[in-house]
Structure formats: C-alpha cells, structure tokens
Length: 195
Image (tube, rainbow, N blue to C red; front, side, top):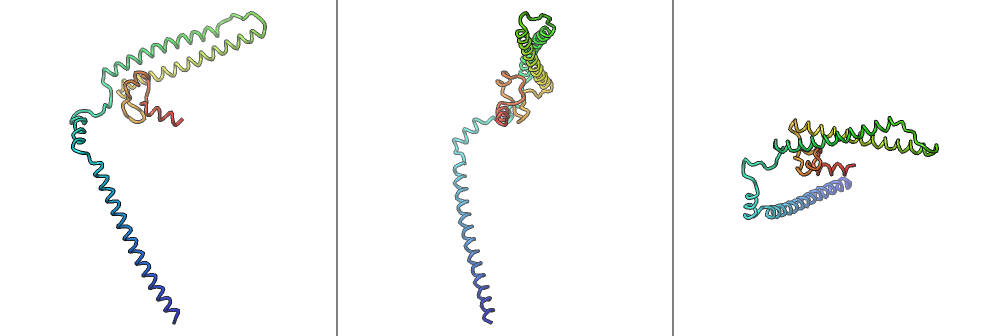
C-alpha cells in the first residue's frame, strides 16, 4: 500500500507543478502583450504625420486625374528617338561596308612581300591578324545593327523605352546615350552585379 500512496502523492505534486507552470506562462504572456502594445502605441505616435506634414504631402501629391508616373513616351519623343536610331543605323551601315571592302581587298591582294622567307612569314601573320580584327569589327557592328533594328521594332509596337525587366519607363537621358537599350539603369547595374 505505501507504494500506492507515493504514486498518489506524486500525481498531486505533478498536477500542482503543471498548474503553477501554466500560471507563470500566463503571466509571461500578459507581460509580453503589454510590451507589444506599448511599442505599437509608440510606433503609431511616431509615424502619424503632424498637421504641417499632412499639408505638405497634399501640396506635393498631384490632384486626381494627373498622372503620377509616365508609362510611355509621347509620339514626338518616340519620333525623336527613331531619328537618333536611324542616324546611328546609317553610320553603322557605312562602317560595316567599309570593313567589308577592307576584308575583300586584303583577301584578294596578290602582292607578294619582297624579302627573306622569315619576313614573308611575318607579313602573312600581320595580314591574318588584321583580317581577324576586321571580322571582329564586322561581327560587332552586325550585332549593334540587330539591336538598333529591334529598338525600331519596339518603337513601331509602342513598347520602346519600357524596361523589359521591371516594366518602368527608362530615363530619357539613358535613351539619349544608349538608344537601343532595353533595361533601365537600375536593372542594368543589378544585371552587372550578378555576373
């Protein structure tokens, strides 16, 4: 029988411990709630604008009907960018033609260098290097031409000047400097950081 009494006593002490543990937790929860409530009140008073701040916000906020942010460029602005792109396209076409002529002339040249076999070898090496540079310039100009043609297509579709990454309007100064761009400066910098 003494074993049964011990079990009964231990059950009573366990239930007392549980109930005091619950009371302690409830007190802690109440304290935490009060702290959170005080913080919320402090934040609310700190972030609520004063009358002068509210008045200033009203003055700086556009009235109803005004556009807060441009979503596309006007027809006149698009025409301006189109002229810039067409001018740049013409310049690239002229450079491309000059490089192609240079490449044709260097490959069809039948002049044999005069001198020792070593100097002949050096001349051929230099010519090959010049041809490779010319081919690099041609490839680069063709790539730029594709970018410009794509920009002209975006003007026709009405999507020119809108960043393909974030959807915001690309700054006019950026388009003046790099008229074929598809990214705003923020997205371009973020892209560079990734690589």
